[in-house]
Length: 387
Ligand SMILES: Cc1ncc(COP(=O)(O)O)c(C=O)c1O
Image (cartoon, rainbow, N blue to C red):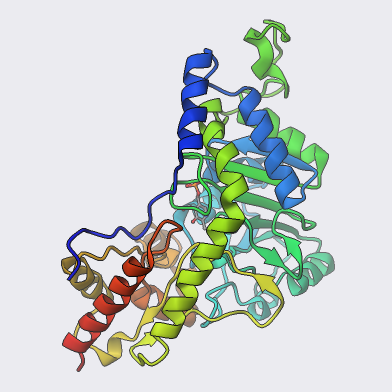
């Protein structure tokens, strides 16, 4: 058994990130400033988006995007139950109604063939989540959006570096919202980015993110700015700081290398678990894409074991292997069970995955020995708990 606890994820921070943060701290300018601008420009160039707005989180990005789209009470927004709370809670906090559509059993992405039956005259938008860093099938989604006049908002929290049919997520005809939370593909500590081809939407999100002040207001205490400012509308405080962007500037050039390492570990797991019938392994989608492998999420076939998923995670912990839960389906959470029970009616694939899923350790600085320890621990837990 390994001696040290292996967490399910930890950020890979180098000396250059640390030096850049120190440079910000010493510079006298630690909040939104030139480093945020540089990170915005470099991220835009990487994903291939003409407009981008850096923010304090992807949750802020979802919130402001929905506000900028003027979601009205009763407007329906279709999304997946297999996501983090904020995808769905932001819809509710903007007065919208989330409409949950089931997932595919293998990729755990939204089952696009089941969306049409949920579209009504109140449907305004679809929020696909590129689950674990694997792109949803965007072409049929675009066809639906065109047919019914819907907006597509990609929850790209897992998808920095993901590609769909040769195009980076962030460059499609949609709004894409990325997260830079510490366990994401790259981090800024906390942070997010809204990417879009729609200049007026970017302008609106940008106004909303910082008290409704005009786009360049952050300069007002710099030599090149003016202390006076105007409030164009009542806004929030969701700006990214320079000390966050300082980390991002040095993470971004490493993203492809991080994804290559994540992919190598995920493929090692796929190979090592191929002969383990108690695990349903994550499936690759059949279309051309680059999976960013943000998460490695097998399903534990608990019907073949004497323990449930939570006990399985506990047994792994006793062997010093951490794991994560992405996700308990949103309609299994207390508030949703009480307030949106009708939404849970027919989501069998999400129900199945929700009770069986776990995230095994996957992060770029994991060694081959760490990955071997994970495989050994998983096999030990299974061997000790077969029915
Ligand atoms: C699918 C998904 N959407 C949204 C978010 C929210 O991201 P953030 O933590 O940057 O607000 C997360 C973060 O875990 C996520 O995984």
